[in-house]
Image (tube, rainbow, N blue to C red; front, top):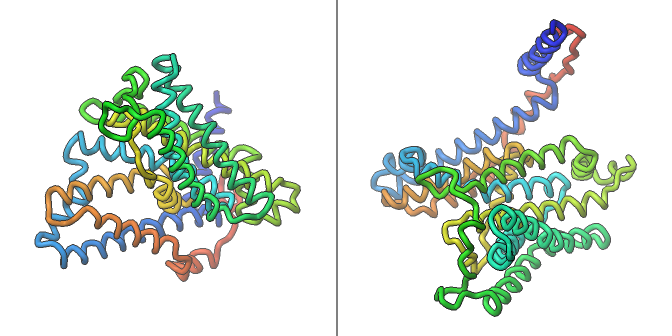
Length: 381
């Protein structure tokens, strides 16, 4: 027992020391968080200045944007509900970006994943948990196969994955629309949509009085599994090393080509699962997307805000969903259009993505960085 207490004390001493005397890696993490926070504050300040010119009540508008989502249970539930697909998209983009792959297939994968998930839940002769499980697995498998296309082309022929995935998104959209309109359309709905998904084959409401479904639990599980995969397995290590330096990975005996393939396949599959979860837990109760949903592009916003770290993706997704919900309420309650949120997003991304932003301050921080060495008692030498 005394040995366990001693180890516990040493563990907490190391945590305290890492906070007081951070090493280079820890300083880098703290700096990235600070940099993102400053970018957000600058974007909000510019937004407020814009509101001074476009709104008759700028103070009321900014107050509504920032605080109204907390004023009711329903709207707070909308923040959480809006964050769910963003978490899937952000994690998918993070894994691909960690490997240095700028792949946009998450957009088409969300669409196909939602369609496949809905069709399995409607037509498969099983019910409840088994139907949801098979629908999600089917979405994962189908979108992983699509993700393999740009991955293998990049690995074997060095074809630009951005161009291939961007074009493939529209192929996935039009193939999906073809099957939806000609084979699975519910003629009685008066819309291009599937039949209603049976209630027992959908995710249940998690928070009463809102539309938040239990799909958020799946999103959190995906975040944890993705983080463990990236930081605790040799495959995740290979992805990270390949993303940092592909040639170094090759010379180290790591399979960089394999990492390029399975990083994109996994990213596509996660996005496909996100599409299935979004439809099975959605308000409409059926698949009715007639265009790409936009979550693939949002995933890169989340990934940039999260510094490509899956563990930070939920925070970035919540922030983005919070702003969008606040923008919706701002458009309903004030004279400012909700499209203003696009301006905020653009400014945040431009500032965060700018390599020169706070570069001088970063150099100052790391100028005298020294490695902190702990002795056996957990004290700084």
